[in-house]
Amino acid sequence: MLTNTDIIRKFNRLTQFKKNEHGAILVSFIIIFPFFIALTFIIFEVSIFLQKKAKLSDAIEQATLALTVENDGIPNAAQQTKNRELVLSYANAYLPSEGFSDPIINIDDNTNYLGYNAAVTMTYPVKFLGRSPLTNAISNIQTTDNGEAIKNKTIKVSKPTDVVFVADYSGSMLQSFSDDVSIKNDERINALRSAFIILHDAIKNNSNVNTIGFIPFGSGTKRKVSENGENKEYCHLPFSPKIYKPNGDYLSENAEATEDAWTFLDVIGDHIDYKKTIMSITENVRTIDIPMHDIKHKEICLSGTNSYSLEREQFDYSIEKIIEMVPLGGTLISSGILSANNIFKETADNGHKKLMIILSDGMDTYNSTKLPNKGFFISKTLIDEGMCEMIIKNGIQMVFIAIAYSPEKNVNAPEYINWKQCVGEDNYYEAHNAHELELELQQAVNVSETSEVGRNTPKQ
Image (cartoon, rainbow, N blue to C red; front, side):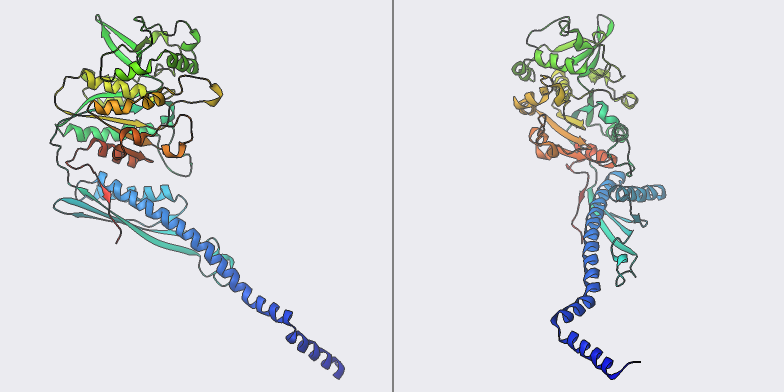
């Protein structure tokens, strides 16, 4: 039973609490705290949304560029299905954990160009909003993005062009485009094969584009030649030696070099006369050719594979031979570049434009635990000595397509090469998935009157 004294005491305590500044602050904090938490969750959620929105925008831009490759006009039903799958493949590659609506794709057929517009809606579950009673009514977030690209209608090139492809066939080409197992992607070599099949069809229908060589390279190139009616194979290293050996016994003084890829590179690097090699770009100079039967290690000069150079008369654009070739071993990119230069040099001057297209997924072989090794910096040294400038001066346009890597991310690596500086910024491309590789390869060959296959347009 409450007495008057008890009631008065409780009333006095309440009055004191109201008058106490700390009590007032506590009440205010209790009232505001849920709103503060909700605001914090909203800020976090908005941050995630902006990141996903940016990735979606990038994906749709790349997808519309890919549509410019896949379509030459208004698509039929089968192509429309393929187009939708293509757009979704880019969205899933950039945002593998999210859900997407069926893309809406419009292709505008104008007089001089084709316009492409793709839109897709992304849906994903909230991460933070569900944790606050003030915002837990929201369970999913949706956002729509679109991209636009145009492609000038194809007109056959007016000037005849001779093309040599220099393709990286080192073992890393057997890897996927991405290390992320959640992203569906193909082996780089399979993407390259598919791109060559599509390119083959385009070149076959264009009499002004003439492919005169295909040079696969690893830690050197492999040549098949006929000598005195006999077929022979050589580990071809298109570098000028300090001392020329007609029998090709450059490894005779170091038996380990025939069986160990690291020792092989070191010995070859020691044999090279760099200044004479630069001169060989425009002059006839002896090169290093080692009989393939002297090579005991399968990763040296593609010796353990069926890959070899297709040169001039050997090359009738036999796409079947290219598809069957297998990558293996390390990377020595200058061996492919100088081999291609020699094809141009040995081809009679016909007034044609000369185009060398280089495709590679990495830098030259390097291993810090194997230092010192003179073979690790062969390409870098040749480029520093002026190899790129001399080839371009020789009337050859060089194009470099970086497959699944960005060289700029490795600028501090000892073996780093600035390919933009080597070939020119307008002749440098990067392909981070199969469709980009297909796009960049077609753009590099340039089977249209303009230099672009497709380009994005500003969003409305």
